[in-house]
Amino acid sequence: MPYPQPCEYFLTHLPQQTPLKQKSHFLMASTRVALERAQLAQMKSYSLGSMCRNEREKAAWTDCLRLYEHIVHHLNRTIHRQCTQDDVQTWLSTALTNLETCRAGFVELGILDNVLPLMSNNISKLISNALSANHEPYAMPNYTREFPTWLRPGNRKLLRSLSASSMANIVVAHDGSGNYKTISEAVIAASERSGMARCIIYIKAGTYEENIEVGSKLENIVFVGDGIGMTIITGSRSVGEGFTTFNSATVGKCTESHLASSTKRRHYLTTFSRHVRILHLYFSGWSRVAPNGGHYRYTWM
Image (cartoon, rainbow, N blue to C red; front, side):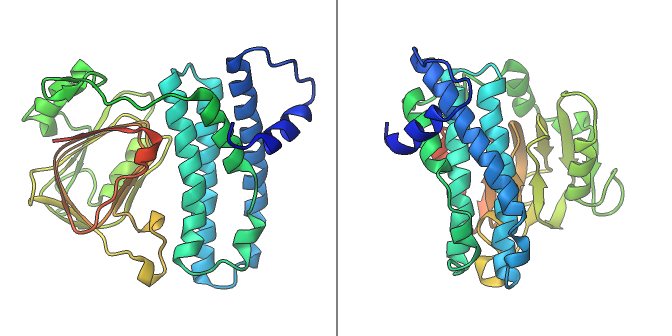
């Protein structure tokens, strides 16, 4: 265990805590403690907004609010869902990465002396202890021909298909010939649909100057374009303009499952998706896929 002191303190102060006789019991108790502390930190973070002295500090603080939502969400996954050991390692690693991303925003913008010290806590140590208890060594995914084995047959068929656009649920087109003129509007519409069925968003040829975020509650989504160099998504945010790296992504995804095909993206792609399938996708400029330390599985084709 990397950090025994906070673990011993919090576990001995849990009300009605039964003896931890098995490793799985310790893992569950450690994760519950981390979740409780994360929820308290999230509530405390909301109250710090009035202390932000300028827009840069407010930008970093706002990122942390969003990141704490993801931290609580991912820790909840490990407790309230039927998870494999690999799943638990993924969500715990993601939560730990989000904590570091919160801190990194203040560092990037050079504002370390005011709000950031007040956000200091033991959550990263508690999550690290849970990761140590889970201890799932990373294994490279097995591939069946051109696809990994975890990719379902239906998704393999969709990625191979040349007519995915004809199966679109939502069409985006600058000229008004689709359902929406912007991708962001299409994502909002997709988030309002009922059920968990796959939602295919077809983006017609054109250059779309926007920053898109696909939230954690929007799962099983597919972006399909007209081809590399035809459908282009571009953005221009940067740390120099007062944006954190986290918030500078042209396309940011925090979904459970995502497919992308035949598009070109300029600047950043930041993904918190567990299973990402990317087909015929071209990155121009600085691009980053994070967090690889979370044992996320990627398919690049």
